[in-house]
Length: 154
Image 1 (spheres, helix red, strand yellow):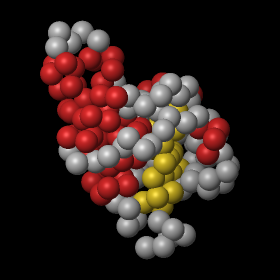
Image 2 (spheres, rainbow, N blue to C red; image 1 turned 180 degrees about the vertical axis):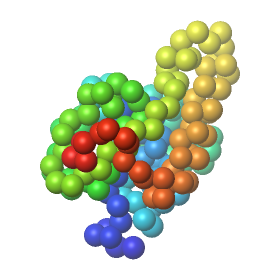
Image 3 (cartoon, rainbow, N blue to C red; image 1 turned 30 degrees about the vertical axis):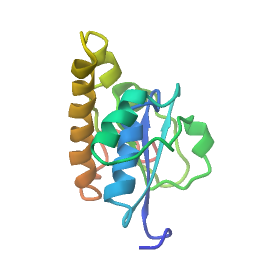
Image 4 (cartoon, rainbow, N blue to C red; image 1 turned 180 degrees about the horizontal axis):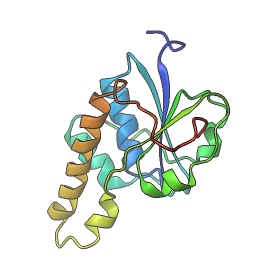
């Protein structure tokens, strides 16, 4: 597919440090023939080193991706905005055009890892969420069903 026929999908979370970065990486790796992926946050705070490590273990390099604010992508004509955390779903800005919004919540690895006693235990949270996000991305674009009760324009 050419760029004009691939679906432009924004994976949106709060910090754009972990979950949305993983989703962008998986989409770029697994679905680049049908998806042009992007990621952003409503309050970005840098890419998470453990997310980079967990993805690298699975053979996906996201070290070149960077944390960005959703406003930096306001001129991209998205087909879908996929919120991957509840906060981003609740604070999702309105996007111009006929953007469909889908919410698929994933656990927050940094929050879960706060109580980890070892690095291995901490990384286990990242690996689990990484694998859940991979499974979701593998289901795309068929799984892109707008969330009930959300306005079509985001």
